[in-house]
Length: 478
Image (tube, rainbow, N blue to C red; front, side, top):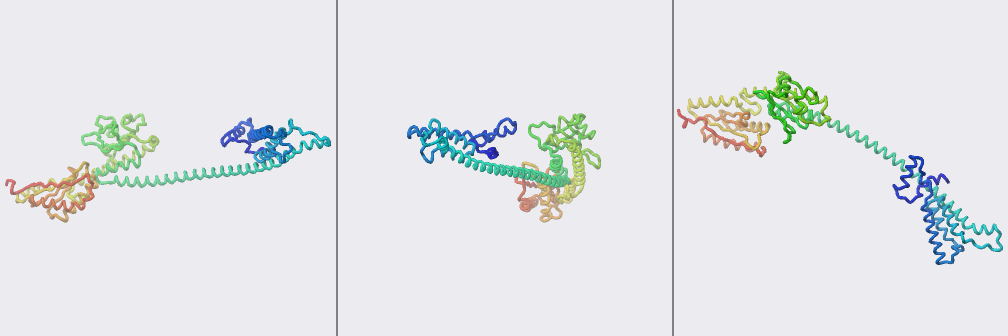
C-alpha cells in the first residue's frame, strides 16, 4: 500500500512544468525537499470541503437540518467514491473522516430505549465504517492502477530516452559520414582543380599563362587577394595580374629598383613572410611574397604576392606550397616567353597557320620594291578586332584560324596573310598585283566568308576591314 502511494503521480492539480515537475528534481538533487508525489493532494481536501459545505448549506436552508441521516444512499457517498476513484486511498481516508465529522458532530442520533451501548455504537458507526471500507478498497485499486501506469510511463520514458540516444548517435554518425564524404569529394575536386589549373598554366603564350595563374593560385593557396608582378626591361616590377583587389586598396602597382621589396625578391631571391621579423619589407605590402624563378635557367621573371587570406590557412605548410607555386609560375612564364620569342623570329605561326608579324615588314618592303621595279600594284587589307574590351586569346586565335581558312579557300596562292596580334591586335593580307578596287572586292568576299564562322562572336567585339594601297604604278612616280 505504501509503495503504491509512493508512486502516485497524480496527486496535484499543477500543470506540466509546474511544482509537480520542478520540486521533485530539486528534492533529488538536495535531498532536503520532499517529493510532492509522496504528499497528499490538498486539492482533494478542497473539493471535499466545498462539496460538504454546499450540501450542509442546502440541508440547513432547504431541508430539515438532520444532515440527510435517514436518506439512502447518503449524499456523502459521492465525495467518498469520487475522491477514492480520482486520487486513491489516502485522500479517501481524509474524505471519510471529513464526511464522518460533518455527519455526526452536533448531529448524534438519539439512542432508543431498547438499544444497548454496542447496538447504538454500531448504528452510529455503520455508515462511516462502510465509507471507510469502500474508500480503502476503491482507493487501493486506484493506487495499484496509478503504480502500473507510472511503471508504464517510466518504461516509455526509458524507451524514449533510448530512442533519443540512438537517434543522436545515428545523427552523429551521419554527420561524420557526411564530413568524410565532403572531405573525399573536396580532395577529388582539389585534384581535378589542380589538374585543370595545371593545364591552364601549360600554355604557349605569356598572356595565356597569366590567365591560368589565377586558377592555379586559387586552387593551391586559396588567398583572398593576390597579385603577380613581372620584371620590366628597364628594371622594376609592375603588376600584371591583380585578384581580389578592392577600390579602396592602396597596394602599389609597381616597385622600383630602390624598393626594399624589389631588392629582397629580385636581388636576393628570398621568399618573404609577414610572420617573420626579418621580412619587414613585405609586412606593409602583404602576407607573402616570392620571386618567380625559372627553375631551369635560374632567371627571375617576376614576383607573386599574397595580400590577404583566411587566418587559419596562413600556416607553415602554406609557405612551402607558396614556394612551389612560385617556381611553377616562373618556369611556365619563362617557357612561354621563349616560345613567343622563337615564334616571332619564325616565318609561320603554327597556332593560327598564318605568317608572323616579324616576316610582314620584310615581305612588304620586298613586294613594294619589286612592284616598283616591275610595275604592278600592291594593296594591303587590315582586319582589326575592335570593341570595349580586348579580345580573349581564344577568340583572337579563333579569328586567325578562320581567316587562314578563308585565305586558303577564296584567295590566290600569291596572297599572303599575317598575324599581327602582338602589335595592334590585327591581321594583315598582302595582295600583290591587285589594284585598290580589286582589293575592295576581296574585302567583301572576306566579310561574307567570315560572317558565318564568327556568328557567335562576343557581341562586344567586332571586325573592321580597311584597304590600303602600298604601291600603285599608275599614281606613284617612276
